[in-house]
Image 1 (spheres, rainbow, N blue to C red):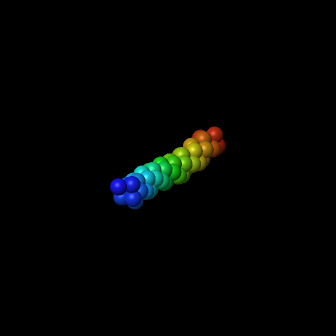
Image 2: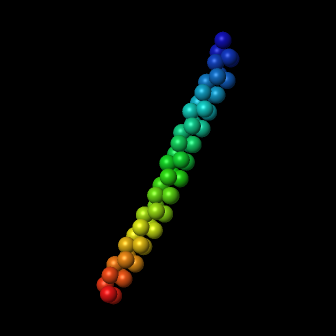
Image 3: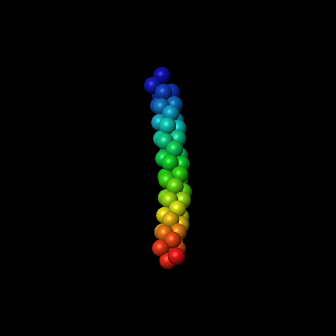
Length: 55
């Protein structure tokens, strides 16, 4: 009986770790896109302020 449990236990652990890695990867991907958007917004604000000061 113990011989049958080991493969299923390994499969369960593997399935859980793969899902968590995928979730972490998705979170990091969202973070990268959020960072890019924030940089673009900050650059746009700086350019807008420079144009406002020059006028």
